[in-house]
Amino acid sequence: MTESFKRNFGLGLLAVSILSLICFGIIGIGRAGQLNADGGVLYAAGRAWLKGLNAYNHDMLTQSVAAIKEIDNLKDAAFFYPPQSAAFCMFVGLFDYSIAKFVWLLLNLLSIAAIIAMTVRTINQHQNNNENQLGSLVMAAMIIGNPFTAHVVWMGQTSLIAFAATMGAWFFSQRQKFVLAGICLGIASFKPQLCLLLGIWFLLERNWKILAVAFATVTIMSAYPLVLYGGPVGMLAAWHQGIQDSYSSLPFNQPGFQDKVGMESLFASFGLKIPAIKIVAVILAVLLWVFRTRINREDVLALLMGISFTFLGYTHVYDYVGLFPILTSLWLYCSNNRNALLTSIAVVFLLFFPRRIFLAAGLPFLIHWRTIVVLMLVVGVLAFSMKAKSRQGFQQEMA
Image (cartoon, rainbow, N blue to C red):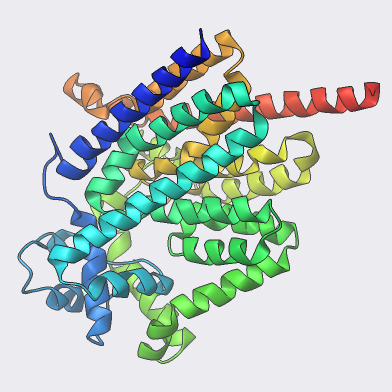
């Protein structure tokens, strides 16, 4: 296979992925509803705060956008993001909704660009020049064209923004740019289920500078709610009350629901309730840190994200955009091994396989298959990482 063919093949994949995102993520071909449905809830929260109302109170949330006919899904929705989300919500709330939904779209597209830039930089550091272009193009196409990205963009969800910030925290920390890493971690905290384990990793590493900057960033982002609710106690109490009143009561947040991912949801779909399963995520993150010398450090974020999606909970199928580091690691390990590459492609295909086919076939018990696929990906990357690290240690001993 010539380099020219590889380049053209990669460019072709990239072009198809961009077209796919435009058709299914922006225009919304084959989708119900309208662009930015979930983003409308965030907009309502921003408008509520700008009017001095409690965004965590459903009546006030609805009242803040009562005159906007496009936002018609608040009856079955609620706002329960932590107070630092005010920085985003109030920003988009400054615009008329006809403009705000495209501002939110732009933020998601910029997040995709940031994820691609960091992924390409990672690939460039680990492959020679002959392989860089194909690997970068394939991963860029996968990041843009996968169904989870299109889903997030169409819904106006926050997963891409939060994950781009999480990935930025790790990316900059590995380059000793601790202030930028801390800012990114602080931004990512508005969706804590995506960055929690990375924060625990920095804590175990005693990287106080990153954590201090992250705390300062969260404080700045929460400045308005801090004033509105009369300080941190009132602010956190309002958020906690909003979670109690809304989060668990909504059907799509219940374990076992078809959009809810992770082991807790998988077990719940079979009528099983496993107590304290979320603590497994923290335990595994700590164990990963204890045995960190046995894996490639470049795979840490991939493994932490995989553990989060498998055991931590509070994630939905569209949050799988946070799996890009695992896919990148697989490419780096398998791109020069035909059998491993074909196996990885098959597993990734299962990850992206449309759920509606199982539902149409009358096989609803298979709707949580992706949790098993993600677990397979985590185990695979861990095995590749340990093998590569072992080989590297052997080569150093021989030298």
